[in-house]
Amino acid sequence: MVIDRTPIDERTSEATYSVRLTASSATADALRDHLTERLEAANYPVAEVEVEESELADDKVEIVATLVSTAVEPKELDVVVADLGKRPGVDYATWESSTKD
Image (cartoon, rainbow, N blue to C red; front, top):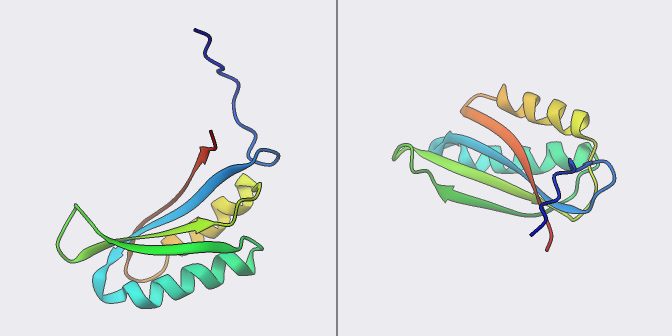
């Protein structure tokens, strides 16, 4: 068995990218809309947004925006996520990728 340990280049690879916010459930609707608007303003169209109950606390939710399949510029996405993380009601913001099989 051979394991390919070559790092993924997000700028040229096709993968599934998502942006995840952990936030207060009271602000979920407004943050969901802002998340979509902010990503689309940065030219990252959103395929879907899901709001899930958080395992961290009863009054917290996970807002997950899955991007339309595209390559991303990591530094640009870092800037968007940093901006989202500063919004009132947001406890944590991050982005992640997973390769397609």
